[in-house]
Length: 358
Image 1 (cartoon, rainbow, N blue to C red):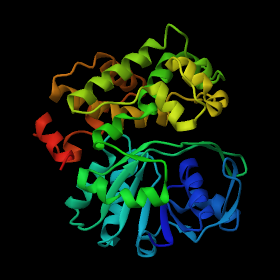
Image 2: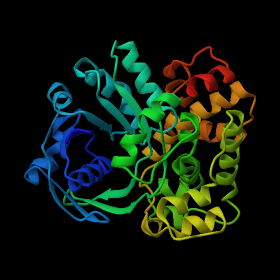
Image 3: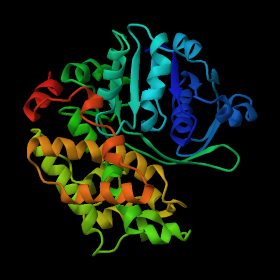
């Protein structure tokens, strides 16, 4: 891996990732679709400031909105922007990419690397490796523009669109992100996502409180022993989809323990309460939040389509999609990441499984 790496994005995940990479001695270049979003970087003399699990002030190699200069400088490019922006980001980068580069979808949701690889192929780009993993940092931007990193995941899965792509990325992940584990295939990786289980159901279960602007702890106070059944049922349906595609999922209570440690053994509710950084996570102040937009449009919609192909019933996931669409005045089924957007339109469940295992 070259010493110059790129990070697309300017939000909390992009800032935390930039600090992490710079701390490891990388020359980090930031790219944003709107240069005004990097005013904080110019205000900090080209540095990203981090506190918490990452602590320090880190000089970056540069930042701006020029995709040509950005792509020319970087061998590895992390997409740390919102996943709904992937099509626009790929369209901007594609004319400037070259064979031998690597794109890492950072918090890709379900099938993010497949979507990016398909978009690159449609744009005539060849020889660029695409892989994905989950975002590794629980973080928030502070009033002064710094990023507070409250937690760093010690474990999660990574994958490429195919098994060959996953294996090709193994040395990269072992070197750059030790502790991450290769998934059976990209569907297993995308379904192993606590956010997909928790975010939209928690917002929906607390929609009146959020809509009234009440302040409460999202994970600590958002659930009770009775209402947690919604989240548990979403998890059960995702497990059924995983089984239909010949894989299994780690129970979400164990996923949280693997993410952040602590040796917790218990229910999903008690596991959520045991995560240190979840104890101070405030709920969103609006229903129009990425917790709904991203997880519904970029995981649950595609999960529902895969389930239908495999003959798996997902009534709770379907209800979450419908309620989210009503709350946002959107049609997430038509707007979200779909089989067609991955290049999987017309394939059977077996053909999709053969493709991701290829």
